[in-house]
Length: 252
Image 1 (cartoon, one colour):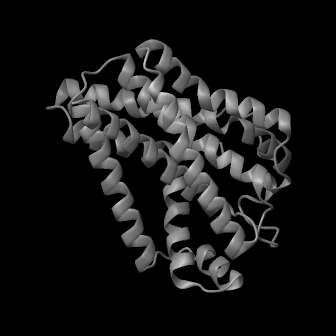
Image 2: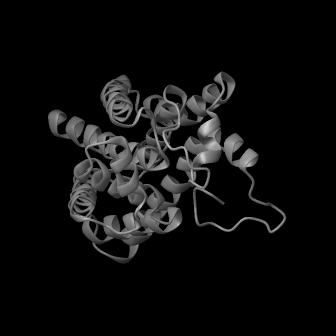
C-alpha cells in the first residue's frame, strides 16, 4: 500500500505501526517490482525489436508500479542539497512539491543512465533466467541498501506529518537480518545459476556508495529523510546495472 500503487485488500488499513513493521519487507517488494519490470521487457521483445522500446516500456512499468515514489525522492534530494546550505533550508526545499532545476537535471540524467545501462546489458544477452535474476537483484539490493540507512541514522525531520515518520522508529536486528536475506537471495541465485562468483564483487560498490551517502546525509542533516531513502534506492539500482554492464564489457 505504501511502497507501490498495486491494490491491496480493502480489509487492510494503513497504520504507523504496520508501516514500521513493513520496512523489513522492502527488499522483497523489490522482487515484485523487478519481476514486473522484466516481465514487461519480455513482452516488449515479443511485440517490438529488442533493446530500445522494450527497455523504455520496462522503465515505465516500474515507475508506474511504484508511483515514481523513489524517483521523486531522488529529485527532491537533488533540489535540496543543490539549493540549500543549512539543514533547515535543505529540508524545506525537499518538502516543497515543486520540481527545481537541480531535481529536473538530476532526474533526467539518472533516467538516461538507467536506460542506456539496461539497453547495453540487454542488447548483448538473450532473454532468460540470467536476465530475470539481474533485474530482480538490482531492485532487491538497492532497497536493501536503503533499509540499512534506516539502521545507521536517526530520522532528520522533527515534524510529525512527514511521510516517512512512522519508519523513523528504526529497524531491529532481526528485521534487518530478514531484509538482508530478501535483498541478497536474488544475487545468490544468480551466482549459483551462472556459477560466476564474480557477481559477489558487485556488493563492493554498493557498500562504498552506501557509506558515502550515510556520511553525506549525516553531515548535512544529522540523519535521513524519506527522500534520502528514495535517492539511495535509485542510485544503487543504477550502480548494480552499471556493474553488470561493466562485467559484460570486460569479458568481451
